Length: 321
Image (cartoon, rainbow, N blue to C red; front, side):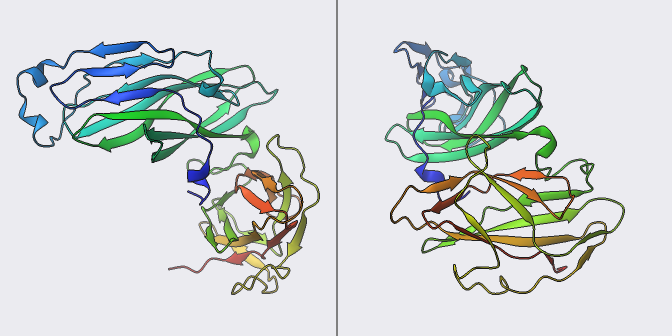
C-alpha cells in the first residue's frame, strides 16, 4: 500500500459491533436501528472453542442490510449493501462486506475498490483491495469482499467503508495474472517507495507471449486526472531531471530483447513538495511500452505537489535471480 493509504478520508459505510462468545451480537445500522442476535447454541452450551482457537468456523450471524440512501455508502458507481460477521471463537472475527458495482460509462470498465475497516475510535484496522473486471455498460455486478479476520477477546465496534475507487477501460486494464493479454505483454506498477518527500514507483513489463519482445528507450506516458482527463502543467522528463540522484535512473537507454517469460522495469520519480499554487494529483497514467504498443492504464497515485515534474527512467531488463 502506498504511504498515503492511511490518510484517505473516512467514508463510513456502517458499524458492526462484534461481541464476545456467549453474549448477544448487535449490528448497528446507519439509520439508528439495531439488530440483536442471540448467541448460537454452541456458545450457550459453553463450547470450548470460546476458550481456545479452533480450526473450524461456522456462521453465527447473518447479513445486516445497510441503508442505501446515504452518500457515505457510495462512491463512483460502487455501493456497499451489507456486512457479515461469522465466528465461533471469542477472539476471532472473520468480517466480510457485500457490495455492488454499476457501470455508468459507455464502454466496459474494470474497477479496483479499496475497502477499509476502522475501529470505533477511528484507528485503521485494515485495507482490502478487490478488482471487478470487465463490467459492461449499464451492468450491475454484485460481490463480496473478505475484510480479513479481527482478533480481540472483547466486543469491538468496527466501521467499514469504501476508501477509494479506481476504474479504467477494460481493454486498457492491467493484467497481473491470468491469461496473457492480446498484446503479449503485462504492464503493472508496484507499491513504490518514499523517503523525505521523494517518491519512486516501478513500472514492470513482462513478456508473456511465445515470441521475443523488443523495446528501446523510455515508456511513453500520459498523465490523467480523477476523471481520466489529460493533466496539463506537468513536465515528463527523461531521466531524473534533477529531482534527485538515484542509482541507475539516469543511465542511457539500451535496446532490450525479452524472451518469453522475461521482464523489464522502468521507474517514475517525483517529489510531493507543496509551495505556491494548487497541488496536482495524478491517479491514472496511460502507459505505452513503446511506439505503437497497446496502452495500459495504471494507477500509481502520483501526488506531485506543486513541483510540476515527473522523471522517467529507461527500460532495463530485469536480472534473473
